[in-house]
Picture 1 (cartoon, rainbow, N blue to C red):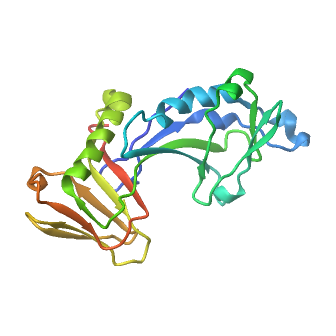
Picture 2: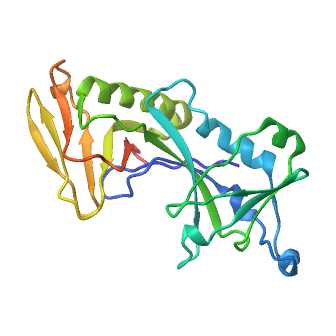
Picture 3: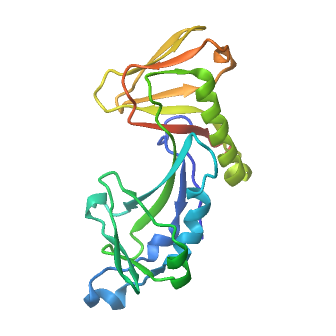
Length: 233
């Protein structure tokens, strides 16, 4: 079963998530606890993650898997995951921010091995985060920002249209503590200062559709995310 969540507008966390509840049944690695835990099949995770990870030919988008514990005090770095295939154990590296490279492999799909974790049953949530590819320069034509937003809108509309979700703009994430800014240059110039968490919300507006308008980042963002309005939900 795949549960779809959103970045909400307003004060909610600024991430678009396609949350997968399947990791709730992952098993602990300890054989002594085997009776108290279960396993998740590779095929179940594959089928749930593939629609969100496969963003087609959209050149401005990346979809990344992320795993987090629902238990307090358990950082992603403490999570261990592995695929127990006939050819051997394949360990999945979990980054400090929870990012994990889940392999979409046809041979593994045919075999359908068990996927296990060192965390208690029901304590993990696997999500897919939709992000924009970084730009190579600090100054970007706004038409390129709009192209990225249009691609994100297509993905969100395809998966979440019945929830009334609409892409409203871009959430720009800088490192915390930096006095970073996002500035509009060329027409209707404005400057936006990052908040305490290092975020700037750039809401799309026709005021910036002139071909000469550019967006200038004071420093390289660490992440660019779709800013989604959940509608009436």
